[in-house]
Amino acid sequence: MSPPTDPAVRTVDGSGLLCVTLLIRLREEIDGVPPGTVVHVVATDPAAPIDLPAWCHLTGHTWLGRQPSGSGTVYAIRVTAAATPVDRRRPWITCR
Image (cartoon, rainbow, N blue to C red):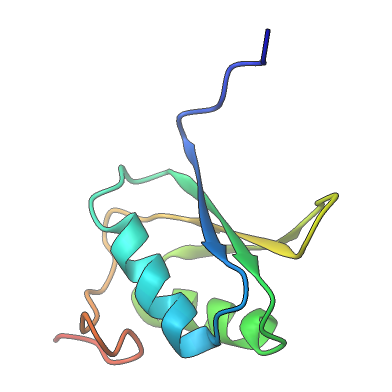
């Protein structure tokens, strides 16, 4: 029997994606998830440890940093209720 999964944790697999595409996928995947949800982002792009925290700063989501993982590099973000909306195809541009 497998252990129960935590409903407050989501995973976005960005393996093989450049950060621009990763941010587009991340924005799409977290659209509508409840505030407080922790999102684990699997990323292979070497720019991810720079781009992901910068995107969190831009949007207001909480950057939780790199997470221990047996396979691949995983980063964590906590979704906030008061996130700044970003453009659908250019998630580094806010919609204010």
